[in-house]
Image 1: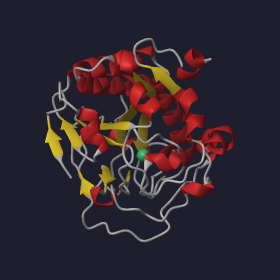
Image 2: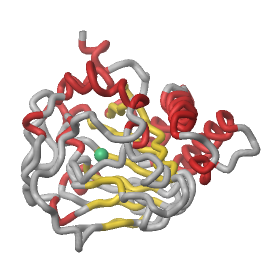
Image 3: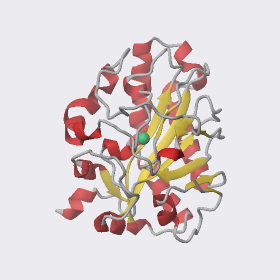
Length: 288
Ligand SMILES: [Fe+2]
C-alpha cells in the first residue's frame, strides 16, 4: 500500500492512485483546520462553554447523551459552512469543484465502548463503504476533531483492498436502510439491532493500520478499503469528521477501484444524498 504524506495538493493522478489503494495523509491543509475549528465551534455551541467534550459520556445518561449528540450531528451536517469548506478543500487540492459531488458530511461521536456503541455512536465493524451502497469511485476523508491515539482511531486494513472478504452486502439494500433503518439511530441505546453489511469470515488484523492523528489532520482513501471503528476503550469520547467525494465523470464512466466482493444491489439509491460541490445543488435535482 502506498502512503503519501502531504502530497495530495496538485497531485497528478490523485484519483487513480486512490482507486489503486493509495492512502494520502494530510497534516497541513487549511481546510482541514477550518473543518476541525467549525466542528469544535458546533460542539461548544451545543454543550456550552463549561463541558469538556472528551468526558461528555461521564456526565450524561445514555439517553441524554444520544439527544445531545444528535443535536451536534444535525447542526454540523446541515450547516452551509461545512459545504463551503468541502468546496474549498477541493480547491485546496488543486481540483475543480464543478467536477465533484459530495455527500453530506458527518460528525461522528464515539464514546467509551462499554457506555454506548450502538445507534448514533455505532462502532462500525470492518466494512467497505461500497457494501453500504457507496460507488466504486468514492473518495473518503476522515479526520479527528481532537487528537486521537491508535486505540481510539479508525482502522484501515490495506491487506484486503484487493482481497475478497465473504460478506453479507448482497442481502443488504440501501433503499431499505434509507427508508426504514437510518432514522432509528437515536432509538438504539444499548444494542445495535439494525442490520448492517458485515464480514462473514474471520479477518487477519495483524496488518491493520491505526493512525494516531492530531485534530484537523486528515486521511484520504478509497471507500473500498476495508475499514472500521476501533472499539474505544480509551476513556475519552472521540469526535471525528468525514465526508466523501465522487468525481462526476468517473462516476458516469464507471471508473473507480476494482469491485472484489461487493454485492450491494442498489447503490443508485444513495445518489439523492449527493450534492454538486460547486453549486451545492442536489445531484438528482439536476438530472431530472
Ligand atoms: Fe465506512
